[in-house]
Image 1: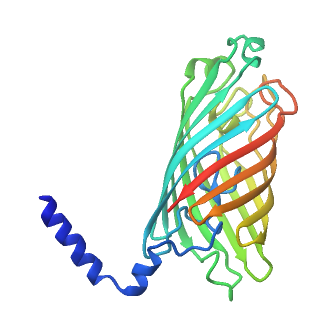
Image 2 (image 1 turned 180 degrees about the vertical axis):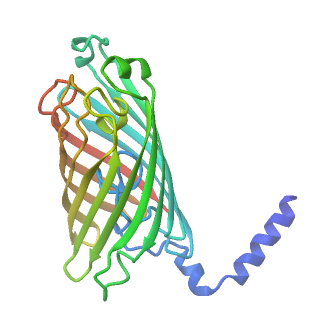
Length: 290
């Protein structure tokens, strides 16, 4: 199609668009009500996927987000970057890449100092009922179902530590409600997964192979329209005999610096990782949205 014809079509579409819809396309969501970007890329908390759809647009538009996150622990670093797309506040598509640096711990594990694990995560989410924000006269939360397909890069090492596969798929269902009168945000998510350390160490293991139901919960208080304070908990399967895997928790502050930019800082406790105990540290994430 020639550029002149494409431009003409876009002008016609803009004139045909109702004034209210055009206004909503400028970014109609209240700040922070679409959450932040989780370490796996889906909109939600830092650890948990929520039922909300990422991006600043409401049901009349298409929005998106980009994020970069670092989790600094005593013996490891986790870095994540990704992109997300929200379509009509009903469908979310996202991609994230994780890089897990073993630093000096890599030598102790026999992998070599600074050995890294990487993982690609492709996600989709569908809102099936409710509206977390605008249905304040109803107790029904926003409900969504989601899928995350993960592809870990170190298949050889994963098999050596007992992992059954280097790729796998998580399924989850989330319920999220924003209580504006109480300035509260609450979420509960059930995830069906057999991922080891979020999938970085593969899927299934020598102790357990099949998926199990795991819980993710978040609660936050909107101290101001631009500041959300809260905490999360996430349980994880314990599939590998060589290293016990424990639940993860965090306490976070998400600040909307501007309408399209937010910063999240948190204290995070990921429990024991690959025989290294008490992996507690700092979480920092930068997110832009439109």
